Length: 559
Image 1 (spheres, helix red, strand yellow):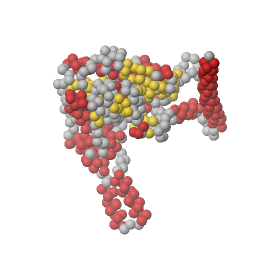
Image 2 (tube, rainbow, N blue to C red):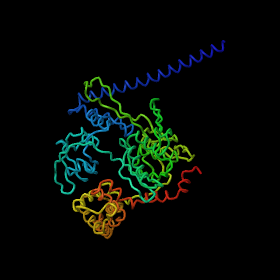
Image 3 (cartoon, one colour):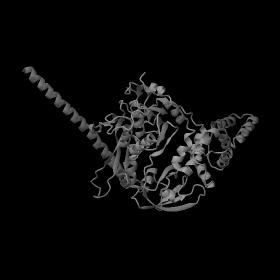
Image 4 (cartoon, rainbow, N blue to C red):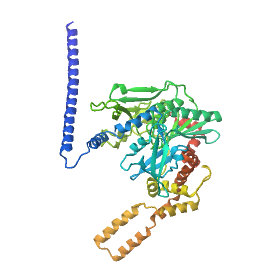
């Protein structure tokens, strides 16, 4: 009895000690928070009252918040009140939009894509056009996300874009009415031959799981399909629920699709297949690359972990973080107005094997907060069949396809949207082209591109030029013989037509990219995919593999 009392007393003491320790730890933490908030408020007040110039208080605070969140990860963001309405419309799934894709080129906001038959297309907006104003407001200092949000509004509401046309340079204002954008996630589906189907998914938007299922079913109904190529290259992800639905097309009801784990228990969740699968037998090859992210990685990882399909291509992006949007309760917020929000990283995705696909260590645990997780610290996990897979690096393909890197000049003109710009010029010079599967660029077309290229103000500096500059400086310092200086000058003159020379040398790499971009001007994104399929080496490899059932089984086997 005495021993029992001692045990109870010892247990009670241990419990009270732990509670006290926890309480002390919490108190210590909240004291630090209170102290730092007091410091921040004092500093903010002093700057507002005493700085030599007038301070824009709201902007100063926004920059302070953005700077603080930037130290965590790129997905944790402060959402201002002005961005809430557009975000709410997107959550409801029925915003009005005009149907354009946008990107930033230097300081310009450039139209990169126009969806067929939608308001922007009907108003004559074309890829390459530069947006200068929206509803009369200059957008020079606006972020790309702010501009995209501004273009979203109630269905039927109007918006006016002032654009600088890509080829003529003239400025035009176009008024258009927002429409509900129909689903565009399934970019293209087809039979690559009598037995192999193909589906290209560009993003994980609302209901895309249904559209992928419908597309696969249509292919099955129209042919005796014996394999599917599921193309997720360049797909940046999207809705988690749609990733779960698409995974459930290929793996059985009740199978684990994905789980999340966070600091708080309410983010420790598991998501299982909720429906009967469409197909558990047809062999599948999933195509991935470095721009396949988030939901794309969940789907490709699910098929890999359940040994349901072969992943082919290059490593995926490696985004394994989950975000949640929270309203910020402020005493100063007027009732009935939009509350600012915080998009906060709250958990990590885990694939069915238990691995996390996050590849960059934002916490700084390994090195500096922006480094890849080192190979020595990656952990091994097992697929359902017992194959070894690893965490910390996105999804590593079962069949790695090491596509050669583009030559430096070709990569440079691609990044500078020079090829994109020539496609706009070509579009202005030709009323029509052949069908996507028949269109080919001629040698005369390429010569025209080279001629056009020489009119463009692009400053590409090759490694040769850098070495030449260093040699010239060295010659000046060391007072070399004038003959050396003369030779350097001759070398510089020979590089005057460098853009032309580089383009001619790299014609084989540039031509397919020109063709792809030009076709998209006439036949939009579906035509772009259709035109490039027959020359797509990775698709050809997938077709070859699907024609070898024994090889597929070998790859998916633990042996």
